[in-house]
Length: 609
Ligand code: M6R
Image (cartoon, rainbow, N blue to C red; front, top):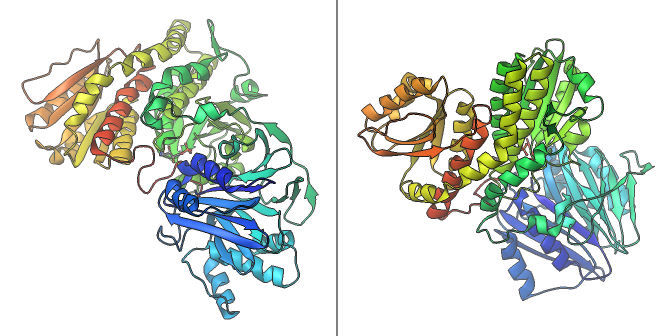
């Protein structure tokens, strides 16, 4: 995680670096810092806490300079404090880093033997010292960085300046993103395009093991063996507006309310009156999908929950076997891959370290091909996959995924329909499912109207310490997603269970202090769910039921509430029922006064293992 931004320009860069860090704060926000090189001197400011804490220190004592590097941190080695905050300075060298250096202990011991004294607990300071050692041997900054990264094991994106080389920043990447922003008479480095949207939309994405040197005049890229290499320049479509919060109190709230538009964007020009259109999955996609005999889905967190919903859909409508697994497990086990299996990676960011590692691992396991379902077009996941389906949610800033999830569901629904038709699903049912998917943006819009009732409900969660979420079938992953949202941003401990499992253990937790949130769509499992709800009622538990308008559910004589939702059909119901659960988590968090968009200990893009 962590965010990096760097600049080589004629103007003073500190304000640009701070603006860039604010855009990158989703990647980590426990401390921040920047360093600017001016007339052979490096001025540095660092602070524990958000970028604004560091900005306040900078504004109290600003410094000029056209070459600089900056960092917002998500701690891996060492607690979040000023000493561990980046940039780290050793000798002539100042450096920022995103990633984890696995062999830093042995490198550190060797450097200590040479007389280096370290002032932080980080793996990063070791890199700065190594670059300094290499410069002492007569190397240029670029040569010194190249020599250093060859010694590193692990993942890194770095930006480095040297007191001896004014106007120059050297960057390198392996296993963590870094890109170049090409300006007019100024150039930049950033962890993503969002960090640079204020200064340029011309972007060059670095590839694995690239090393880059930027100056005001240009950017030169080198491979790990020091050979110059060219990489294509892209026009980023991001606009500064897309990352504005507008009238909303939090990004999360804005992103929840953007869902009807975002889902409509996901579906646009991909599904027509007669069903899913050809060539939706990229060049050669339809031909490859025609050979699919089974599917393995790999993802983390919220994206994993989207994959779980897809399992229910694809198995029911396309009758193809599907397995879903969290990436951090999959990558380290010897999964059996039957012939004709498609590997699907789902990731909002496309930079999640475990998901990328699983994708790379899948290459040697003999899959039919890989499909990335992703929100960031130039991400590593998209670039490495055979087929891609972009979710088109637009930038998601809130750490808790909301529109990323529902757009992933929309994309997975398109895939389900494509596979279902190919596998011979009855045409009346196929047409019904397509009609439901067309209705999804409107159904989500209707579900958003529950907000006033949910605000009232949220008040009852303020003193709670625990909550239980229940669902059945494709709504079990929806319950999991609801509980993840609640724990992530309100810090209330929440668990989700398939409702039928209740009596196998978790029922022991149910008492008058335990709210039980149930997702109750209309359908064949409704009666079963009602019995599970009776089990809760009988033990005095407080029930909060999100029920389909068409479902007959009796409030009963005990405590609790029922909120009615028009799901718009059984197929799309998981996406629609997700919305009130997002709103519930959001309003509980607001009432409890937590940092909704940047909850403690988390980061948006999990680029470390
Ligand atoms: O970018 P990804 O979709 O790969 O991220 C996966 C998870 O880290 C992410 O969904 C995380 O669980 C969210 N914070 C959940 O709200």
